[in-house]
Length: 117
Image (tube, rainbow, N blue to C red; front, top):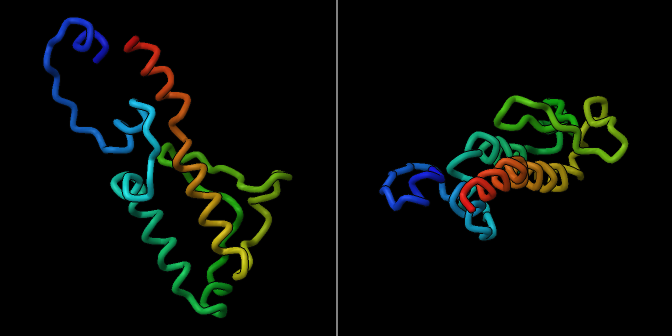
C-alpha cells in the first residue's frame, strides 16, 4: 500500500470506513463500527431490551472479546472475569466495551500511517 502511494499506482482496497477514518485521523462513530462489530452491537441491543429478570438469568462479566479473540478486562482492578455486570450497570458495560473496540486497532493504525509517510 505504501509503495502504491509513493509511486502513484492505483490500488483498490475494499476496507471498512472505520479503517479509512482511523488512517486519516478522523473520528470513528458508531455508524462506522457497525460494519465491523455488528455482532457485538446486536448483542448489546438485546442486552438493553431484557427485563431485569432476563438479564440476570444470562451472566455477563466485566470483560469483552475483541476481533482477535483476546478477552479484555474492563475493570480498573482486573477482576472483570469474576465480576458480574449488574442490570443497573449494563449501559456502562456497553459504553466501556465500545470504547475498547473503537481503540483496539490504534497501535496498528499508527504503524500503517508511519509506513505511508
